[in-house]
Image (tube, rainbow, N blue to C red; front, side):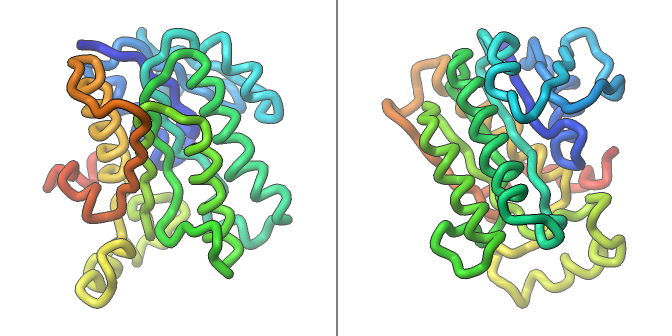
Length: 234
């Protein structure tokens, strides 16, 4: 049973891996990739690269989101948020993903997966954690039949993560709560794709709960989707 996907954040570390997984996935029949500039990185027959003005993302994505089944957003500013005005961070972390989700939902998507961050809490005293918590609430308000919220801590294999942390962070897992365990970008991408696929197939087969389901996935919840020995796959 095949499905179509629209992806936001495809030029990022996690989003790029999501796209590569979906290109190889025979169940994914069509893949709409939303970017801010032209790219030939994802050349494949089933990939449609749509370049949009991010300030008009909902309007410009809408025609290409018609008939999609799944929306995936691995998009944000990450550690750069500390150097940016709060208004700009909010636009990138909340405004753009929420508008993308609205366009996908209007196009027919019933399943959505959004990457946020460990510690997300709209009531947090920390600016970034508060903004990410508000991001979660914003995408929840779109009311997909299934929404997966993925909360990674330090993302390994990421161009923005110092290489020494790829070695050190896993050694420290024993000393920290599991929700703050580091996660490789490939494992995070696999979790987002696999959980979304499971949710879609359950709906298509009539096995999904009625109403809206929101599932927050922290490290332990994503771990069953990891493939041991393949974390460093390009």
